[in-house]
Length: 112
Length: 110
Image 1 (tube, rainbow over the protein chains, first blue to last red):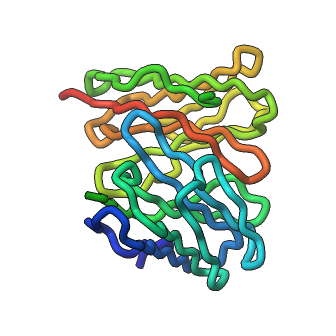
Image 2: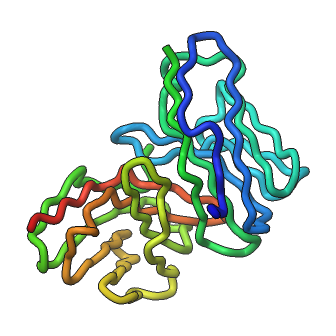
């Protein structure tokens, strides 16, 4: 079984709709991250959380919000989706004090 | 301002030869560096890392070199195999956050 799972894997939605992407992990890690990948831009950090009560903005947080429901769960919301939010979204986790982040399989989001 | 740059979007190498992927960074405060490999429809997977106090780290066919004075790191794959065809991302870390480069698509030709 995968250590980091993301749902849904693919989603097509319309401009203005509210979308939630979910991430769960069984690695027991404290720290969780949301990234988006765009062609030619690599992965950019949207939000990160060092524990359940700690939420931090990343490089490109505008238009997004997050919720850390439990140590194992971290969800990303687009309150009103727009076409330039079309991208691949990845969740990642790491243990306290560790360097290596472990990624989920990604969600491909298309906003029409 | 791109703090981590991979200036080659793509690289094509013959099977059995050496693949060299390059990465430059601007922030001297980064204290560790990683390489990730990504296949289509999958998330990035960790490949190899290096601390800023070292200049070389090896793991099997993969070696990462760090030149702090030049703010440059490279990944060497020897010998290259068809299964190495993927997109490779370098990442620089500090304070438990990573900054990624744009990625280099490596194609290994038979």
